[in-house]
Image (cartoon, rainbow, N blue to C red):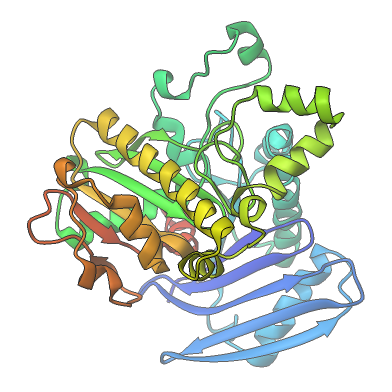
Length: 398
């Protein structure tokens, strides 16, 4: 059997997943969080024959290297055995690859230096990703380590799509352009949709809507990203859980002059105190929808803003593609919110988009069609699996 360990590292936590790639099944997954504190926490979840068995432990974890040892101990004590399922490689999620990385890449000292250098474009993410790489290489020194970049799928964007109308010299000097994110998810679900429909990926025009706490839309033509909503950073685009999405840049000048907000305060406001949370005080789309349906005016307004922006991008990408074969909803909100899917596509009959209410309301964890039989555009819900996509890409280069 061929096993791959996938790592998604944050500054004080990391997620892991062990996948058996011959059958593409998950053997175990877990989370090590609050690293660097006496109350660090491990959750180790084993899967066998469709059953899940969870083990949890609270203890002091000094750093990521120590955290990986705790993870290894959990595998040894609770299974599955890494001696029976030795990883042939470790795949790492890295958020920002800039314009340098457009495919999965084996980690070398030079690659590591480049990821660190790109930290100026993702200061909250790339340094944490490097921490995870360093710790994982100590824990698994004898297998290749491969990095898969969130931005890589969007390296096919044409210049007209990735270029901002900013002074060209300034943009070039400071690497200011659209990079896009959630690429691993967009790639995975667009390919899964083609398989599900038994269609040639190269013949399909698709709009993929990755709707979670972070949210992005991508226009995919022939399996390639040709436009995407996130930009230099993940702030641009759709309304998100705590992020503004698109906003007039002059709002920051205005708030600096009138409210005396500095760069750090504006960053905090736009990224962590806005979006659905900033409009309604609610952090979860399920709570927002429940409150909106119960007559909460703030919740209703927030959901309307969210849907308005989403519909704007759907229409814009329809125009960019010329014709659309599929619209795909994925990630936590996209896969589970009946209301958001219905409202986002309401009134688009003239574009050939017709949702079947019964299909939309049916609950399932499987890929499924939610459009009506007469809909010219096939609307799908496709559960994303970024860890599996990272594992696939990891194997592709080793």
